[in-house]
Length: 174
Image (cartoon, rainbow, N blue to C red; front, side):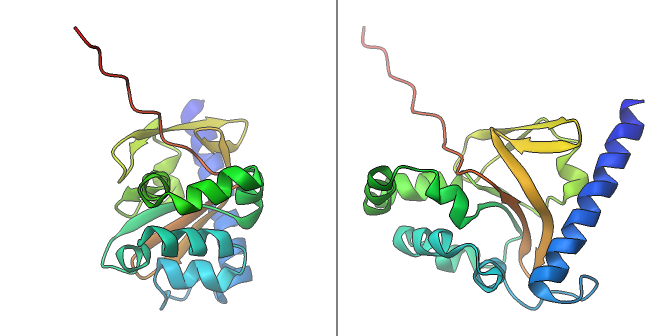
């Protein structure tokens, strides 16, 4: 029963992915000619992400060979962060880089793969939790709202919240 539900969910996600690809990149069956950064910028709803990637010095990394899987927060997702907190994050290059790399997984992890996972190791080094419930996929507490946006160097899955890496564990003094 669970296997049938996962297959159904994968089909729904694939359809959503095709709809998003068609809306943002033309024919969903054509091979992308843009890298992850170019694809996100062309979509028009990732300007804050593009700014953050620039501030963190990660543009060239995500334009690199890859493949990368990016759980990309929209401008609306970034708007959920209080303005002062977002401004502070954009000024702290190391913390910003850590947060952004927490949204990236090495490899080309499609929606069909994502729904089979309970977690994934990010480029930042920590794991993100992946849950599938009632045909909804979540990465940590962010909803996946569009999937399988193809790029020449990987794939983008759109999320509705910025996910934050776990705080470093305090070292015990003895």
